[in-house]
Image: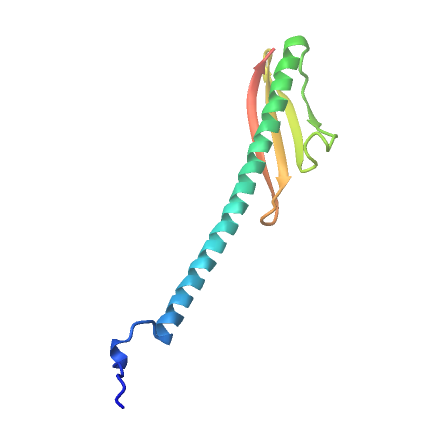
Length: 131
């Protein structure tokens, strides 16, 4: 009884080495994707915090501009004392100094703790208000 045997070289499929190479490539691709996604989340958080800090600084500038319409701004500094107002993350300070005549310089600084490294980040707005 003769059996029909196929030649091994004509068989289709993957060899073990081809399979290992494919697995290694997939693993490296997934690791790169994970690292990219983690960095994307960090950068998104930084952007959100900077945007919120900008809003808080602009809000204080507008308040001081409105105050200048009804009262005379005097030289000095101020700090927000209500942590709930600034989400408990941000510190907002401002300084008013004379610019000569009826004008004053106003600096508003909002700072916050870095969530991705040492130190703090801050943003400062400067303007001149005529009274």
